[in-house]
Image: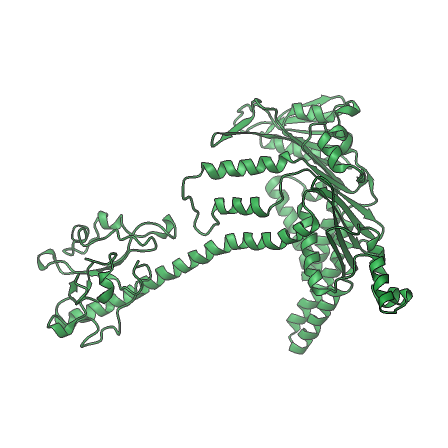
Length: 610
């Protein structure tokens, strides 16, 4: 299921929660009416609104999934409610923002959408025939109007070679979109907003050397993509983790009104020494692209113009193969997979997409190979684990299988028809669960990283407070607090019996046994010993040590840091920390926690006498 369909399904699913569910057939409605002694005429007038039947005729009944949602004025009423709330707040700025929001909705044309219908019909062989219809009785406006005009035959079906694995033909008018952006900018900031759009285009032209605005207006509203894979054993292959994957061959075309797009790309490529020699092949003008340092590519990309289209192709051979006149048996129409998945479906409209089962398999294999090539336990701080993301994609993403989808513009709506191995019910479930799973995969690592950063900050802050208390103790007693590894008399207490803390030095705390007073009794230099959040033993405080008198006067307090491993121990602290001149030796610096190495990385967090 492609992204527009998933978006549509997700939107409809949300609307479903806000709308009453309707029976899935007129027969059922009439049967219910008869059982309740209600006349059919009354059902049609007081039951489902008349538009329900308009949508119903574009869908299939009796399938595994059926949805109708009356969305007329839902957004308009929502904006009106916001406007009323803003008036009660008596904040002119909020009122202006809400008013602007309403105008933007009007510009986008979404107010005109009155109904949405979806259906999914299981078929033999495990595929689903899915249909959707967006009812726009007043006609397509705004962004929806940029999706092309009347439907037409798909010429790309006869242009694509028989072995094509991905073919897309879509109507879209960038000039309408640019004009819509200008109008929205004007709604947001008046004429200043329009000037900012123009300045942005001018800045882009200055940086790239391309007149973007002129190029947009030279496009004629149709785009096509045809792709396949190089045959096994071809030269342009890449090896990833011992898995040989063939690189795709692609050709992308845009219908043009004149030569401005091609001429601009040729001029720009020459300016940046990227253009090879321009040649003419029949009615076609073309030039290859080369690397700036003149390194010859095995298969050089090519830009060409022929019969009202400007093309970018991965190599000249594939361009020649696609654009040459061929017998009908060598076209996509005779591709066995295409014939099966598109059987009985329209061959005309405003958009069609054919994707072979080999395409998702190709990308899944590439993803597996990339994950397999990563070092073990690879992680990027704050980013989701690649292996986890791969599993989510495989479990919840579209299953490999051929897909065919057609969009048909109609005077009062937009119809889509598709066949794939994913039905409407599965698509809605995936559309609701998949984003949540992806967000969790992204959010959880970031949340955990934020927690770790917070703990690091807290440890450093607590150590600063502890340093103040230690120095105040020294002023009063002319000595630093004593330390001990004996849990009977140190600040670890019973926790010190834990294997992770056994034998570790920390502050003495038992004043009653005749030892030196501690930081907490009888004088409270601190009210309590701070808890080290990175200690393997919950509730334990920091490690603390002072050198013997002949080694100088000083102290060191340390925590294992986010990795929970003590790099500084009682056995090596006297080597790493010499208090004579209070200069940190290289050995101690090397064992310092540095967040630039990763939020959870090696090294201890410590503080010494300054």
